[in-house]
Image (tube, rainbow, N blue to C red; front, side, top):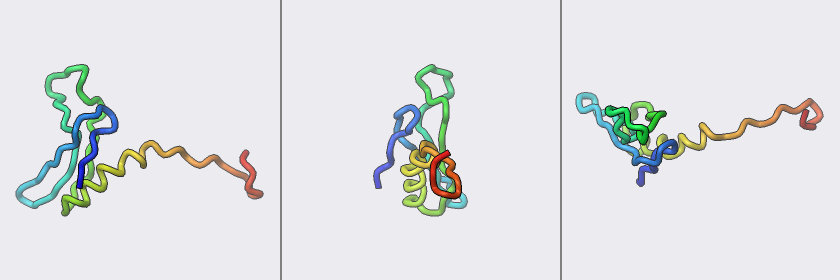
Length: 81
């Protein structure tokens, strides 16, 4: 599976493996240690997963969840308020 780039800065997603427990997560690969203005200011990451494919799926679909427009409220007759 292809890992999509960070939706906030465009840097590649990076797989992180917790070696002792074999947990996997994906985060933005931008190096934020030098406080460069080009670094990712959001630093998104997935939750820890047991399978690499699960972590990749979360990373690749996370953007849609955060940018989804909320449904407008409507009254009981279905008309938009």
